[in-house]
Image (cartoon, rainbow, N blue to C red; front, top):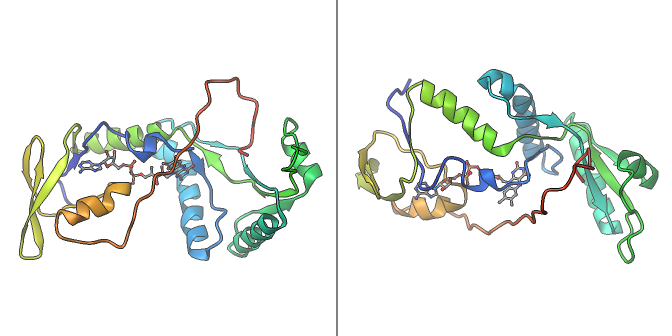
Length: 219
Ligand SMILES: Cc1cc2nc3c(=O)[nH]c(=O)nc-3n(C[C@H](O)[C@H](O)[C@H](O)COP(=O)(O)OP(=O)(O)OC[C@H]3O[C@@H](n4cnc5c(N)ncnc54)[C@H](O)[C@@H]3O)c2cc1C
């Protein structure tokens, strides 16, 4: 295998999307390819803390997606059928079942009554930055170098091959370069003259001040 590996991170480890997401691990999608991909991911997460010997605080809680309109109810039915077809547990639940699952939920908010929902029992959460720390610790033990505060600013190409990565802290010769920069994919690919058919949009989550946990499943 490849032995001489360096990870170049412009900020700090896990400071990208990974430290900002809502930590939901689920497979209740509509497209069969997505369902199978994420179902595999769910299974991998179940064993990941043991495999990396690092506690990711993986916790299976189930996820409840709510419907406030007939159109959304139809799309939830489609997701349930698609998931069940692929062998992933999904269930359409009525108002009574929702109340049993989450007693604190107000089902009759004015103008937005809850009509029903999709229950995905295998959905889970994990401490998102612990996932990165676990992988990083084990990778570094195997000799991978991790360079934080090291931004890739350009790449030298000879023929159709990248030979050198230029960073704000110096240059690195490389036989193989892999980019895994999420929303910056088009920006970094452009450094070697590639125009990817990808456009990035910000996705935002609202964060409350810390409150005592009162929800067991995700809603
Ligand atoms: C608000 C929000 C909620 C989300 N909720 C969920 C969820 O519930 N469940 C789920 O599965 N997914 C969720 N996601 C998506 C998930 O977070 C991402 O798919 C995942 O974190 C991507 O991981 P990554 O390692 O590919 O990218 P990132 O974690 O973004 O890492 C990319 C890294 O590349 C670095 N980088 C960029 N450009 C350069 C450069 N030029 N040189 C060096 N380094 C560079 C960045 O600093 C960054 O640290 C959510 C995303 C957001 C934003």
